[in-house]
Length: 109
Image (cartoon, rainbow, N blue to C red; front, top):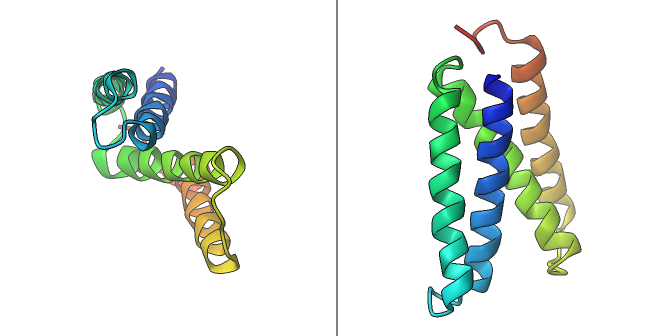
């Protein structure tokens, strides 16, 4: 169940961060509301994850997957450019998340 909550936390963080891009410095109401709701829900669900997964491990997965998804949204949807070092760095972060998720014994209490 903790991975379900972690997935929700990641998705809401991605929603909040994407909306942050469109909030125009919190001058646009609906994107600003989505930022607050997205981050609020993200931390809410992340708190349930921390019942079973140590904070460092959960945060590494949450931030790594969230950053990768935001980067993909920026690349495909917002047409932001990514160079090879950025792509390699993101791949290394995702590799780290996979190692933690698949191989680490410290991921669950």
